[in-house]
Length: 285
Image 1 (tube, one colour):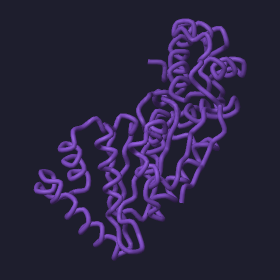
Image 2 (tube, helix red, strand yellow; image 1 turned 120 degrees about the vertical axis):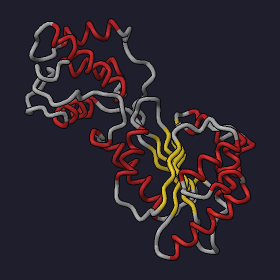
Image 3 (cartoon, one colour; image 1 turned 90 degrees about the vertical axis):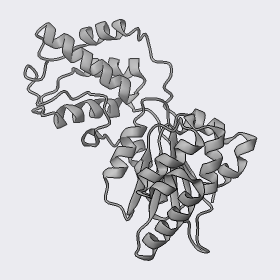
């Protein structure tokens, strides 16, 4: 729609988790390092938490696009499942047999055998559960039991639980204390700073084919950060709509007036859901 007007190959602020557009701020870079460390060293369970829109799924896509010594990685993005469906989905993601998909007993036996075989040749097995705050207590208990797949010296399965802050609250429930004890790494994503917001916008424009000419004035970026709280998803929504408005009014650069109008349309007086808390890495081991 506005791509040619702004000299772009494609729209830079789409909400799909395209790993080409991953933006590694300081907190995202540290989070990615934590995930890679947890998987490579078979640390058991790693928890990644963050507010909605902070880029957790994009980070997982980046994780899966990185070369890792993981010969089998299963990714589940919709964990609202029954126990039977959960194991059927995992069997498919791990490439196990139909018998494993139909029976928990066969699933565990095959997964253990497959994981052992991969470990012998230096490979490993990992499970990544996105939107993990939606997992039922029953499935969280099943995740705990999966951690019993181990040798005398190493875990056979690495698990990443990724979710919104409610996930941390759920792990504090008394019934899940045994699961929490198996969490060896935890990282909490924070929102972007003002400087990172500007860098995020510039990076996405550049990847979309921008020539390097700024498409947003510094005051416009200041307002975007203020109104979005540094949440990447909301930044993208505001920027996309601002470019649409700029194109409609033939404005070659988006200024603070355009951003003000877009924020008014989205009823953003100031985003009150983002907290720029310091990133936190905790080891329970």
